[in-house]
Amino acid sequence: MQNNLFVTGNGTGIGKTVVSAILAEALTADYWKPIQAGDLDLSDSMTVSSLVTNSQTRVHPESYRLTQPMSPHAAAIRDGIAIELSQFRMPKTSRPLIIEGAGGLLVPLNRNETIIDLISYLEAPVLFVSQHYLGSINHTLLSLEALERRNIPIQGIIFVGEPNPDTETIIIHMSKQKMLGRIAWEDEISPALVSQYARLLREVL
Image: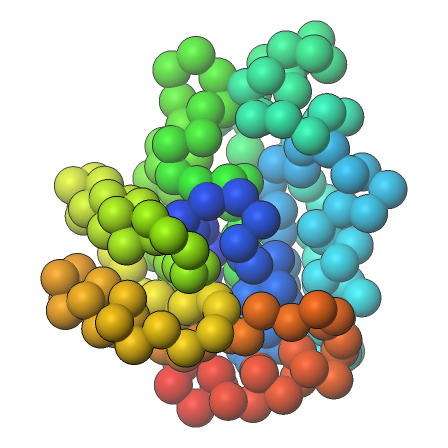
């Protein structure tokens, strides 16, 4: 597994933050959310901090903290700022770094660039999170195809939700990517649950 991983997926609210916490725990990795839009009093960085129990993981500050729970480009406009790729600086760390994106790959950062441009700029391989829902096959395969067109390395897929063999099998077959595991959709996520998943995931990373 690469030292740095960019966690993205097939949409918003699909479990990327939980998966990021599990990866940080499994790899004793640092965590960085480049853009937080809204929920500044209960940010994804704060959630990861509350879920990771090892003493080495460091949560790095966001590059942009936007006040509105909107697409980054729109939230930035509301806050009177402009998001620029040149302003993103990869945190310095001797540990692996888990980078969590905002929404899906084509979420706009500004009028010209999207999350996939940020991934290319940071030169980080992707771990893709695919939540099960009606239409998730299409959204996942389109996203994986977009990554491949940019020659962005994909380390594998983690599915989120109850087991769905039909969906998982066809996505893995058509994308030719590796399934790294599945995270159940839990009503409540605890540090103990994250540690449990981390132990399982550590075996395949």
